[in-house]
Image (cartoon, rainbow, N blue to C red; front, side, top):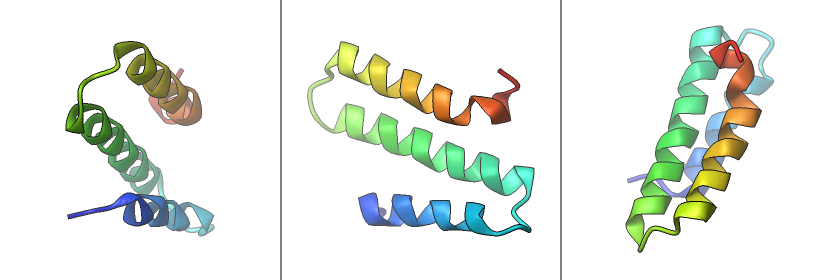
Length: 66
């Protein structure tokens, strides 16, 4: 079971000059799963969840080709 600290630690790999595109995408994916988990763990606040997902896309869009 992961918690917020574990999810945040995933970003450490991005500090390496040897981090690959694949590793970056895996970090982005872990963060996306965390957002989904947090959003579904309680009653869904749709506007808040949409805002969080938009912020995720803004942060990781460079990996998506946006």
